[in-house]
Structure formats: C-alpha cells, structure tokens
Length: 258
Image (tube, rainbow, N blue to C red):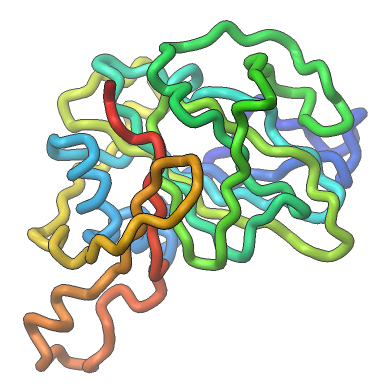
C-alpha cells in the first residue's frame, strides 16, 4: 500500500478516532486516478510557470478531515521538505467544499518572504493535532481560504498555513495535496528522493485561461482550465476531455519568489 507518515497516531493510542487526522501518502504510485491528478499537464503547466523551470513531482497526499477532527497548526512545507534551492510549490485541491466551519486552510499572506520560522510544541490541543509542531503567527494577519469543490490553491513552500478543528456536524473536508520542485533542486529527505516523477506541461500551459482577479487579500489570480487536446484534436477516439475529472478552477496565492 501507499506510504504513511511515521508520526501519525496509531489506533489504540491516547488520541481517539475523533481526534486523528488521517492522511494517505503517495497513493499515486498505485492509484491511476490520483496519478492522473498528480501529473495532469494543465496543473503541471501552472506549477512550471510559477517555478519557471522544468518540474518534478515528489509527494502526494489524500487528506481526510471528518467532523470533529482537529487541524494541523501553522507550519511551512519547506520545513518538512527541505530542498535547495527552495523551489517547493504545493497544490491543494478541494474534493468537496472547504470553509471555516469544516476546517478550511488558513494562510498568512506574505509570510513566504520571511524565511523558515522556528517551530515549537503545540499550544492549543483542542484545535490542533498534538503529534506535530507549530509556528506562532499573528492571528490578525491570517486569512481563511474558502474553496468550492474542484478549486485548487497553489502556494509557496515557505507560506505559513494551517487549519482548525472541523466544527461541522456532518461535513467532511477531503482534499488532494501534492508537492513539486524544479528538477535540479536537491531534496534532503531520502524517502522523497526515491519518488520524483519528471513532469512537463506538454505544451498545454496555454490551456489555462487567466480570468479577472477576484477580490480578497491573497493577491490571487483565478484560472479556468481548458483541455487543449480536445480543442486541437477534436477527433480523439472517445470524444471526451482527456482530463475530465480534474478541477475547473485554480486559485493562485502567495507564489512569488521574492
């Protein structure tokens, strides 16, 4: 089966099923649907344009957050996935609506410009999983990232982000998350060195239309995905979109490498 996080609490530990936050790591190695998301040329085209270099995919996760489950405190992905030079870029695909009630992501806009921050043990065990650590943030600076099903957030590896407990009675908050780096980037973790998949946009980055920027404090850009192959090759065998199950909208925030 797929790899799992060694630090995750085990069944029978002091953390009950209602407080655990399950993740499945790197199931794209076995599941063709997740591999399709992980390598979709339209998504990879956006990542490649943000990084500015040919990219490699190094990790994927499916995250399940059922009602009552706690969130992960503020952290930076580049703290856990150290890479040189730091080109780490994450995508976060909402598999269903993510909002403040069911524990959507919160981010600190501009924090990716401040470098890697010092972490410390969790302080709010009611809201956050205790198996990880946290970075202290000014709550006045945080912004919730509310997403609809199929929306995607792209963000810099040093962006401070986290989430709070799912307070809903019956709403899951499931997501597909993956990480990419430039192909020449050195990744420190031995386990991730075995996994990279060299990716490219296949010339289809033009299959992403830039729309008017929405309001809000993230400085986001909105994109609508088009299937370039379907447009260029209308005579494909089944007449369907080659990536019909991928999201229809992308939200880009805090990806500049200042």
